[in-house]
Image 1: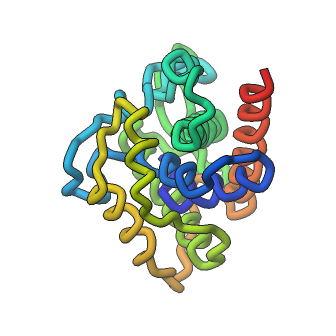
Image 2: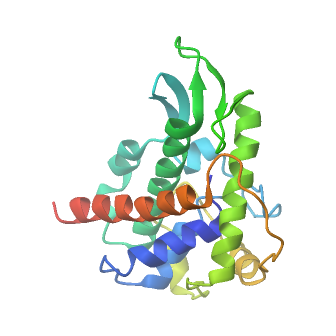
Length: 229
């Protein structure tokens, strides 16, 4: 999954093209789905990825991949899209969907019978591995990209407001409290740019920047179509 900074940078760009009634609530909604305690280990609740991201198995170029089920999310929240936190939540799972599906299409190798057998890295070489090993390489690339976004600093970090808790009541899957939200905000505010240059493995620097740009366009197009129905 893309990191919080990638989600935040994406959400900030979305607010430049989509009218959001409360940007702060939208940005918080964009961050809360990652409640699995992988980064912050002491959230008040644990919400598995399958629940928070409406995850299910999807066929991507003949390979079964775990991706957010956007249609299932919309079935539950189609009547709440006026709420900026719900729109932020939707933006998060759209972003995860785009990045993970694109990674599979560009990098995953099948044996032709639906079995994942390896990855194509940015040198053009094929590396045999399992999905768990692929995901480690993928998340390393995602982390390098996030560090570059931290260096640019072209995003707004949300602030805690009491009104957030009212919007949060609509999000049934993630019953976070004030302390949980503040932990996310504090974590992001304390991230430090690492000046050490690390090399990408799956993507080139240009490729991953294109994915980021195209993802923003994908989210904006989806929200425009959904909100203008």
